[in-house]
View 1 (cartoon, rainbow, N blue to C red):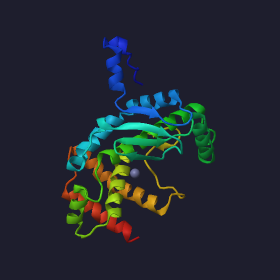
View 2: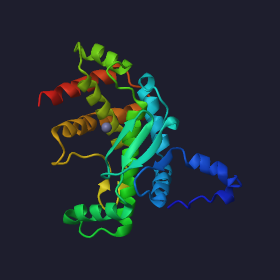
View 3: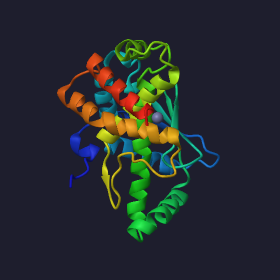
Length: 247
Ligand SMILES: [Zn+2]
């Protein structure tokens, strides 16, 4: 266990620590904003080193990344835990109230894990939220639009002319899920927070997650070696996508 660092012990003005801490600005746009939950999410983003992970992701994405993690912000909106989207540089994460989120988790975990404590559920809620921030953050810094360099290079490397935009979007999802999986934390009682395919997922989501699974070891290898996405990676990804499409 690491002892939390007290800014006063470091002789650094508190404001500076706060600037560093709020690496990503978190705002709450819900009808009943919860300053406490927003603050906890902001702290969890720091604890889970989301900015560092996104920086690794940016290095890996190389020329296909047009924005930097520092440009991103987080907006909390009403909705379901684990769901999110990104609009430009603004990540939207859906969050029920903390009480509702905890209750929902406890109910869904009960059949497999028995009674999960409030403290464990609380942590799980926050860790799920930051995992979503990471996933959406990858979408935020990766340009996978139909006119992107990624689309152009994928078409060339895969040898499929007129690659439709759905395929490039699928590739972007596969990369986002793979990176989310690479940095997934272990959380009690479920273990790894890595995305997994659920029975109730739509066929489209199942496909995205399956691609993420296939790409994950390769992405891990590239990040460890400090390598950027290259033609070899795109060729590998296109093989995986073709396999998935033939299912
Ligand atoms: Zn996504």
